[in-house]
Length: 448
Image (cartoon, rainbow, N blue to C red; front, side, top):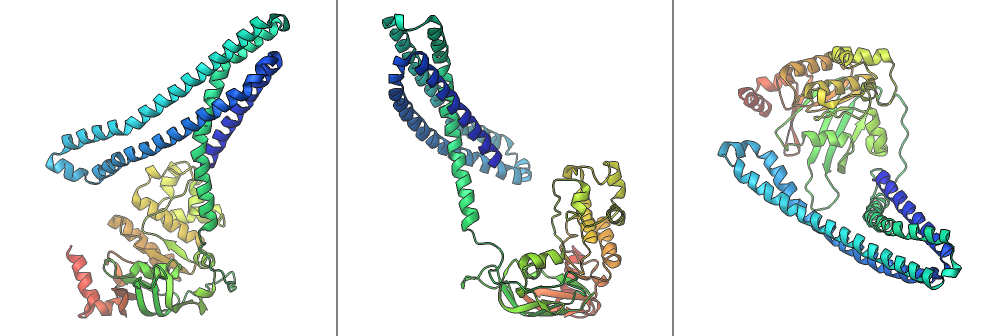
């Protein structure tokens, strides 16, 4: 946006300079014609005001006309299987053609007023040329042939420069408004950080990775009408324990993870990591000390090295060792090595998630958080991930939000959530062998 606006501003400045230069040339070589310049300036001002107002209205019409087309397109993509199943292709195709035609009407109107602007300014330039010729004929003894020639050439190109000036200014005006709105949003929107002074923690924190939830209640906002997403959660996780967090959709599993990352608001209670109350720390500090592998793998523009080690804190050997552990070394070598620009389209969902695991291995934090990290990969990739969790993160505290429960027995503890409350928390083998809600949920998923 900034580069685009800067380019438009440069074009406007260039057009203004050219217009001023032509006016100066006309005033110098045909000084009597300079008297008419203020009148033409007033005329151009009213023309550009009318054109700008009309162009703005047509731009709004274009937005309104494009909205149904975009909506129909997205709905057709989402319901493509249903459309094919019921044989509605021709109906949707005809509707799409009709919406395209309707969306192009404002474009046609915009072209019409653009041609109108060019026509009016060319008429103005023609009037200026007539005045120039008349002035030269009346006071022929006061002008040299050279000055008359220069003036005529200047007048001929004047209309083109005026059209470019008005059109570039019209294009710049909405961009300036957009930049202004972005600036106002950045200045007026409250930041994520707290206002109070944050406590200090050593660079090695968390040293062990013990986590304590004490009567934790949280919601997605501080409004009184918002229902808490977690209520009275009391949970003690020892350093180095691997905990599987289970529950149905909407049970509060992900909300527990968001609580650790301070992405939802505290209502009451506390969360402590290695005895430090996280509410006394800055959000950025807490998030930078935890290792998170999200459900949807996130790849950043840049090299493979940058995606594995964005903070540039690991050596080449450490990066290559991590890629070896996640079975991606061969793929990386085939693509040109760790300094090669990454192409997300050439990576499968499982490979992207394994790359995120390599990133977590390089970061070296005592707490690893997995938010359904294995839910969108095949069983072979899931087995690789679980083997990495069991070996490379053996000494770390692991909180794994699980959708698939096939590997739950490999965890030290299992926590079952429901309706924002902690329902069960114990050894997974013990819970699965009894008449528990976790056992019922496990058998339900196994039957699918």
